[in-house]
Image (cartoon, rainbow, N blue to C red):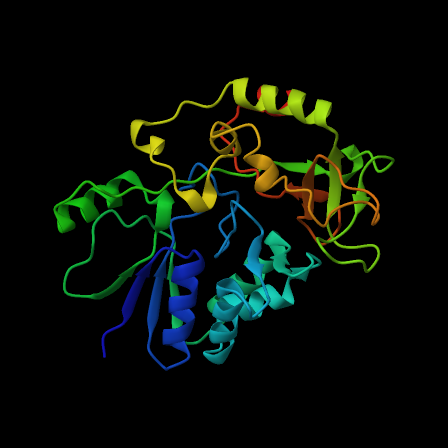
Length: 290
């Protein structure tokens, strides 16, 4: 049987390579990083997570948790690696990004049925078995090749990146650890409460802050990764029923803040925290003002 060529070593490409290789099918992974980097990636490792560090809920009662149970049944490389690199995040499966991508990379590069090509693929290979798994950061040349092959220019992906802050910058005299609806101390999430006046100021800065230049097609919002300022523009209380919902996050049973910003651990060393649900196009100056 011919080798299968997989273009892109992100989450999808890495999983596809693993599933084929463990079935004794020879695989060639084509990944241009780090020789040619994308605007978002920081390393040449496989399955690098450039947006959130969480795979969402582990609870089988919802779709995300059920999917993980299904992935476990087919010996998923991504799921197994995530469990090895897991860091506390309440009911969610969150990982140390660097550790996670290193596990995926080492597993695939040490598999006898996997070879690796560190060159940019600019055209879809002909007369080969090919999986294109280059995602939203596909290079311009390959994007053009895919568009020509499909006879369409409708290849878009809508996303934004959530800010990450240092733990030392968090005022723990005000903030506190707690998981939503759970009383077990201390909890995995740091909660930053706001009263109504603080929320009003926050909302104003958020909705008037300068954003990075957005291309025309990005005006079409992908609801699952909506920029927080876009969400806020839908109404003053939208955030309070979304990522800033205070329900179940009071410091004690008699406390209920007007709004809450949740922070989730982003690395195993416990030095960085991700602002949950706060994907944004705001420029750094506007982010600092918040």
